[in-house]
Length: 256
Length: 256
DNA sequence: GCAAAAGTGTTGCCGTTACACCCATGT
DNA sequence: ACATGGGTGTAACGGCAACACTTTTGC
Image (cartoon, chains in turn blue, red, cyan, green):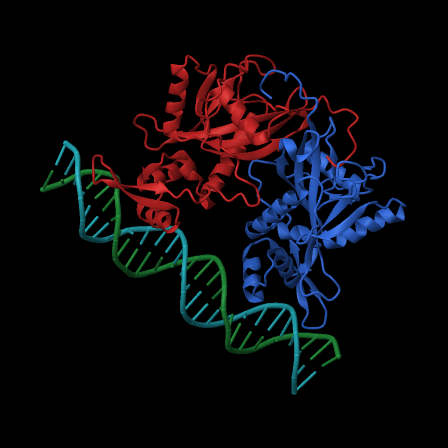
């Protein structure tokens, strides 16, 4: 951008895609699974294949905004955490030259149902969207398998040194629920006693007066300390997660 | 990229820039400083201001290749480590709409002189390039101050959990020299005894039979274990650092 | 009462830190 | 000899993993 105008780069287009994770617990499953929504392509290239939700970058919007917008338009979802992942720009990753700015995002399990129900009530349900277990994906369009693998790698790393796990939980939660998030992402069991101490020592949890009552001893409910960012992004401002109340209709800019 | 062709995004152009760090020890200085080369702009916008080396993305090259190429063309330098930093794409970051894919890179101190000497011998010396202390930069063009800050943050973080420091050292080095790299990046003194043990325990150092003789007891020379990547990039392949022997002339694609 | 999850206590291990100390070399 | 950096030893501290144990509920 500091140079002369290019002879011709009109053929290079910029797209924005998002890998958005949430957790889903199968009816009688031991652990929760990491799942993500994909969109079925209805035109070439890769017609019929599943692809990451996304779209073209608009001239008048920033990258973060483009990620939020295209995600809402294709899936009807608004993430609780959003972060840029990587820019993919190999020449042969698409039949035409496309540079994809890819984001990754988190969405609380309770929000999935709420947001989709809101759209359904408006007769505005997303089409061609389906949820997949991140651990066992079919062959996707373009280089999207590699992209999801990278996003998963970042998620697993980041859960170890930040508080992003809270991006997958509702406002109030028990320590067991928080632990389940970690277990699902890391794919292994954690010691409840040690997990409790670490979580309490982190200074990001606020105990409430509420309890979650169930089959056994009631568990205290905690709240996330919102003064603390979910992740330290250094000198970068956190990607705005626009409070998409009355989310933009995703049919007005259909993908297919 | 999974969507329909945009109505018009021809006005959005893609640039690639690189923040390339090396260390320089002032004549009688206590510590080495982190320095980076900047290019003086010779046209609007920001004419006269210093900016990161970079250029427009070519239609026929990948992003990594574009970073290497534009860096060589503007500064004559070929990095020893290269990694994508972030994609900047705010609407107002430039008078015209520009998405910048920014890389950050490391260069060994001995290579700086060697590469520049090679260019000088060919009467092919870079112009409008100057080196700056990363800790005290003047106001740069565009959002480049923020970008350098972010690159520095990444460098300091990454030095704590990877072996990138070796990207700033020649093939053989003493533990004191390796420690000086860490001290310069982190900006604080490290205990020589403890540093030695940590370095040896890391399994990335191979002791040689050589010694660096100086004013005091000779210090053993070590070599970096090249089987180990400088940094774990997960499912991403390490950015190729093309062995730019006989580096592309940077005057054939002048920046100004 | 019993099973099972919530929550507390205790111990050992291991990596890091601080710092004392010896070693080898140039002057 | 002595100053200086190279290199080794060691003890205190703190975080973490393992696991025994107590508490509180539903059935």
